[in-house]
Length: 292
Ligand code: MLT
Image (cartoon, rainbow, N blue to C red; front, side):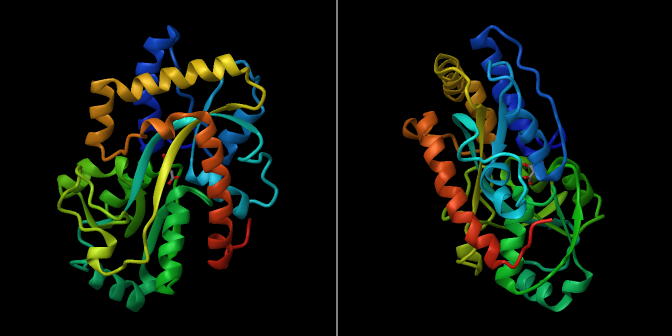
């Protein structure tokens, strides 16, 4: 698990891991190894024994954006894994501390343009989803904000709710409760349709920023060389977890998007990762970002 406990990827891993443990008859232990926008854990996972006892949860950051940010990345998302399956889709929501002055997305855009030198954006490290997606946003708006890096968006959200940072672009599964409680403010969800988990939050299209549409995904991967029957067993356990009514409801209540049957195979995930790496690299390069 490549980020701090309590964040969207960790919560997804724990919810699915709980049900998968029952199917597999083996307790899945979630180990958080943070650093370098999630790439430290994935490097460690990619180099682990391919025996089915170490698997990884990766996402749009670690398995799509990372190669463009880290020229010396020690793994290739398209080659060094046996994709197990897509775990959950996670739309991006633009959020801010509760007393951030703009009242809606149009005011938010004007405010960022007028006050960029005074605004902090929180993220979970270079190439993380929160970093990449807010970079896309600020690039579109032509502003540069001060970046504050956390070990994951779990701790970043605590900073946002405490008013220590101003804004964040984060995966919905981290945010629903705090938005509903009024602990943070939501400006828009970056998907074509509103989320049933946050029906009052407008889409970016409705709110005046139609070109900003982005969604992340979390998915399970095994190290390259993990035998096919083991990968198939893990895939089946994942799919069973996603079909379990209680597990499914927990993910849906958090705003997660459950993969349909066509998206459940390892082959689909492998093709998707290839397409996403190809899609993100030019976007990131166009945003003028150099690797560290
Ligand atoms: C997390 O679990 O903390 C997030 O997935 C980090 C991110 O990529 O923004």
